[in-house]
Image (cartoon, rainbow, N blue to C red; front, side, top):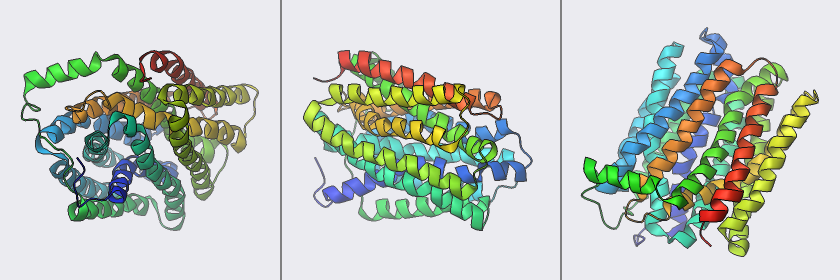
Length: 398
């Protein structure tokens, strides 16, 4: 039941900011990544760790934050997590070495997990499964707006000031989100689960979730979709800036384009789900996904080395990503009204595990060409389309 003092608009704003923690934490500093790598005298593999370590910590921490939020409620977990996020953001901005930056980014990922896992659980607290995809798409539309602004803002800050200032921007965002939650957010968990932190019930709950076909199907969808997104996040700054010769500001605008197309995808998601249902909507989006991934691979193999050859197919992928993520995240959590935090945590952990593995691969395969980015995007696009057409078609809600 929605608390009386928290309006639907406040719920959407809160979801947008909490879900927006993830793209702003990854996207805002991407234009500064080549520069800070050179400034700190680090290798490309170390630079990738500032992203992959953050996301591994983010994913693993959700396995803790999810059950804790089922036991204590969403509000106390959000307050603690957002305070820790602000501290880690300040520490990242003041880092004097790559090793210290990786440490602070890891702690930032742990704290970020509290906000995102609670956001997904809040959707299940307040809405029926049928309403979940629509509600999640509204929150992810807000995420899309934040993502649109993050990379261009990061590029501008980096160009005018330096990478320290870009990372300090995360502390400002964290402080604003913390203030809103402390001031206006009301607890959404109607009934706390006193058994949520007991190891026996916790393990049984996780096993039940992992053995549920709908969770497996929608988690596969969200994992493959995020795998493609992370591939782009981890490799794009080096490809655009070092291979294609973009400035940090130009790179920020390229990221803005993709984020804007993603935002359009979240709007399309709401319309398509209302008209076609979840399964058919996901199947249609799979066509866009495969077209984007295959297009990038073919252009790279034909030797087309240009910004449009990356941006155009990636925009096609991102439009479908705006459909797959609301459906995937809400669909994975929908069967578990009494364990929404745990289900959200497992779904998030699996997505971040994929991101970490992708980051490790990219750290050793980026070779000064567009081919590693193209091959990885083709791989994830194929897996995503198969997940949509086979798993979700079979196990998704009718």
